[in-house]
Image 1 (cartoon, rainbow, N blue to C red):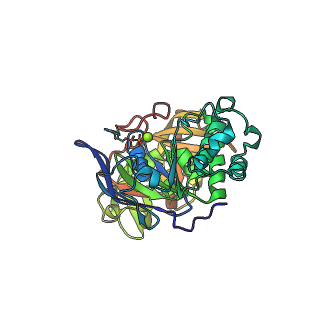
Image 2: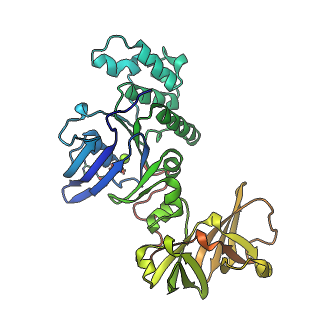
Image 3: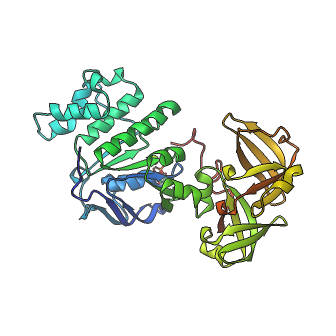
Length: 388
Ligand SMILES: Nc1ncnc2c1ncn2[C@@H]1O[C@H](COP(=O)(O)OP(=O)(O)O)[C@@H](O)[C@H]1O
Ligand SMILES: [Mg+2]
């Protein structure tokens, strides 16, 4: 519907924000491709809102520049920037009906004939039958869709969304994620979406910038971030990772390492530069990539797979999968997720097992970082319930 011909990307160059001696956002370079759904993901307090507010012009950067398309907007006040923001608290006008709420931006600019555009927006957010309702007669999710329509009717170059689904319950949030994604695809406007919910970022975004302590720690497509995390923070914050302390014994196209007395292989191109030079490293593998065999069946595991022996200390059946916790000489509390297809009744706590996986699913990270960075309860990371 709205075609951006002006190059609607956001470009931040060396942008930072300090409050007194505290640095909320360290100098940051970031390019948001035009027409993309871009997520800023990170725990509460990592600088997401501050970054978004600098794009909107609601916060003056301490250094650096903000470009929208080719235009340097760093010195423009918020109302002169072609952006709109949707917040968690949607702040609709309670005394106006839904149509009037959506028409507000056009009316303020003195545009009289608004009906066609308002109808278009009502259709876009699928609230055509609610046009004459007041906000309080709508559910939270519907109100948030009105807030999105109210912003999009201004045809912003970029729509900024700051935890827009934060106030909704889990089920509604999941629905709205798909809904927002559909709306973005339909209008083709660049969305910059702030969230602390990694599943939300991965579901919706084409590109995710993972922030930690005022810095972008890694940027990429969701699957790339998940499969190739470059730091322990990203490995732990996006899903769950097993991280095993190991030592390089052979470098090459495959890196061979020892951990807990056994050898493992890591593809060289999935290792950080430091790892390729040798020494200590952290070997990573995602829980769903690992298969579990009872020790009695160890002989039937195919050659060429990475193996770690251990003992099951805990298992939880969660329907689609069973999640095992395994202690091994290579590492404590390794996580293994097995799909519930043919369950082996011998795989219970106390059982001696072999964890095995395709070496291609292994990644290597620098050893000089905390194993626990990015896990729930680690510094700077709160549980989803706590975060705001
Ligand atoms: N006006 C302010 N004065 C002082 N510190 C601030 C101000 N605004 C934000 N901060 C601090 O900057 C950090 C980043 O905040 P924010 O960008 O809101 O984080 P997020 O949105 O990721 O939760 C936090 O530690 C916050 O307390
Ligand atoms: Mg915030």
